[in-house]
Length: 354
Length: 260
Image (tube, rainbow over all chains, first blue to last red; front, top):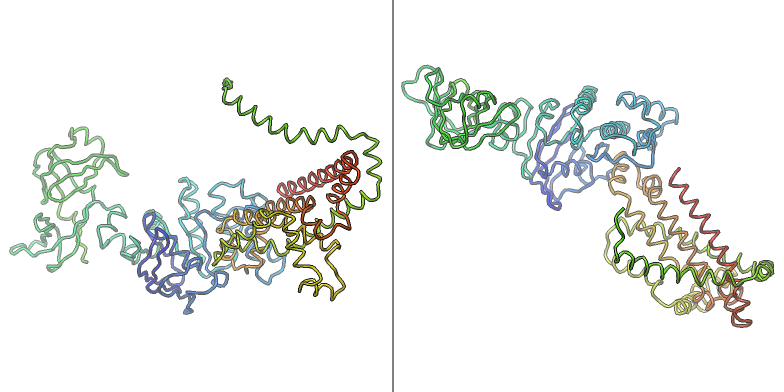
């Protein structure tokens, strides 16, 4: 339903360069990027607040690149909500309904229904200045949905909300999507993308570096940036080589032309990336005799807490990050500068062709 | 409590002197007007007529120019165009040019020999010596106050809110009347009050265009010239009181708007 063709824009500190993407009817499309990647700028161009320098925007087959804002039927929920401060919650929600030829009674009815859906029915008489961030976000959603947009654009809708409110809103967004609403949602938080997206595009330095279904992007990142961005610590470009004599299904991936990693693979020789979860790397003081075929000796360069445990950075010719518990770290008495062994099984290594 | 420093005392002293400078003359004038003088003057037909004339000409000047000033202020706040800086400078011009000179300029513009004057005389209107001419002179010198206040008001309305309204499918005209205007309203009202006040107190430009009918500032001047300070004083006191009452009413009205 929405197609962007080769959109470019320079705007202050932000720039977008040759953005092309296609969103199909009923999709929940998440654009993932760090702050400053130009995510909001992209939404503002689709909504018509900013005109692109180059490229075309097409909605349902119609070129809207230079269409007026008010004629686009693209509903944008701003990051700062942009709730009208001089109107009550009810008047805010009903605002867009007054543009249509419907009776006062019908406006009241639709406002009430939307308020019910967004779970803000008890706030209708309130002034915006008395609302919390999560409530403002719900009012903004209701107000935008009231104008019956063909496409709903969400700019960091869950940012700056605390965890509990966030999960409630996430449920609400999923519900809106299930009602058939096509959504584009921009965020810097890949966990939001995992929990909501049907398709994902990763925006980096003004370009889309990877896009696809959520599964494709999260399981087959195509670049180090994407891998790191979605929380994968061990991701290396590698050349898969067939080793003569290996008939047990193993193959060797060569990283940086020097480090050889053994993995299970039926692939013929080719270029690609290998990926190892930090939790799958076992750390020991001495070389241990285990079933792990990949054993690297290296120096500990950094130790710090991560989301799932302590993260241990090891320089072993390649930069490995192992995730271990605090208990193990204490038991092994590892500190920065120590020499340790990092081991992982061939089955822990995933090869992704590029 | 923190001890008050010497510097702070010095600031208070200097500031106090200045406040005294504003209060003392006014207070002196009020105190040296006897109740009897006050009431006789308040019943003087010439005085009351001139006050009514001043009030309604200033009011007309403000309201009529508001029709053009508010849209212009909105444009200046929202749009960038060539010569914008020039236009901004132009708006402030009436403040800086001497008001008698402004009066001469306006007179040339609306006198019987000018294009505007000829056009007006077709409908039987002669600006010179007419309340309409007084209003024109008042508007000329007091417009900047309304324009600047309204422009500040519109600039203070986040562009985001207007974009959000457009995004909901609202035509720009409705966005102006439902978002920009209500949110800038307080500034606009205070601009209207300032313009009204400035127009009411105008003397220099008005006297060039219309000595008669006499607005109060001209009447005060005439009484002072013909009879002296003692006769000019009660008129001044009454005029000041009337203005004060108006300001207090208008201020209260604009405050209520905010709380509504």
